[in-house]
Length: 52
Image (cartoon, rainbow, N blue to C red; front, side, top):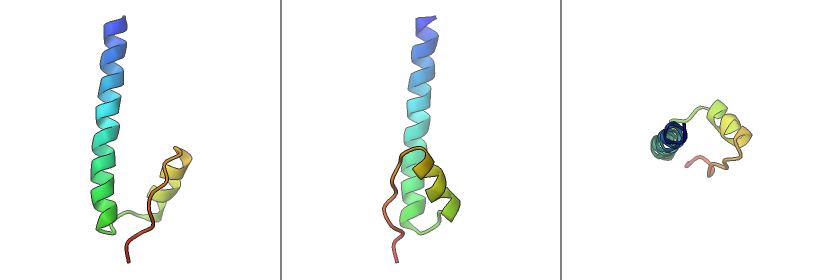
């Protein structure tokens, strides 16, 4: 069972990392909606202020 758990965790980490990369790219281009900031804050992630 440990192997499956390890697989699950590594998949989740990879998934979160790719979301982080794409989210950061979208954010730097000013494409994120306000809901994204609220959702991120709910997860304890502080996004930098939107570029002007």
